[in-house]
Length: 215
Image (cartoon, rainbow, N blue to C red; front, side):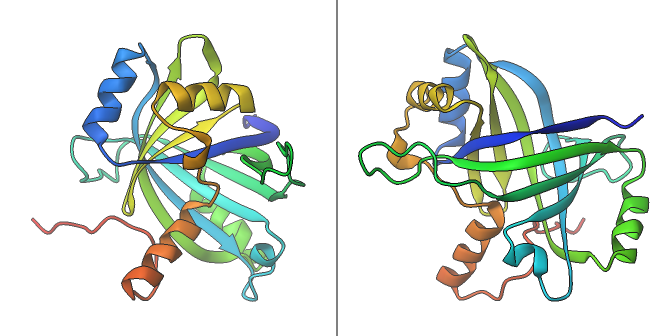
């Protein structure tokens, strides 16, 4: 039987300016590595008229594989594939005395796949085709006393980020321990952040992928 999960996802992103420094800080905090560094290849699917995106919905197939040293991905490495649905952002939460929303909250359903390629064929039969691809290297940590909070260190083509996922008080506590404040919280998706980078640099958007190095 495939593994299933349904929950509300509450998270924020934090931009990392100094990767070695944040790794040292995680070590100082005695962060426990829950999952070692993984390479993730993500494909978002949508109808030709972008109906899901217009409704704030998302269908994604993510392929995860153990990451080798550096950024050269071994496509034959063993890994897993996960199908994810995310609903529209919930009504604003965390409002206090007129403060704007501080956390990204979405309904999420996930199922582990035995065959990601076969699922992509099923989606194609439903007229859902690849709309955007992005990749990253992710390492997942847990902090002492905040075991239900996921601290995910993401190395992406547009920079390095931390994702904090869990209850709002745990997010705020972890952010403070890591040297951030609520003013540093980022609620945009990686796709939105990528489009913003393209606009600033005058680049035509494509897929958010690492540049392959030729041997």
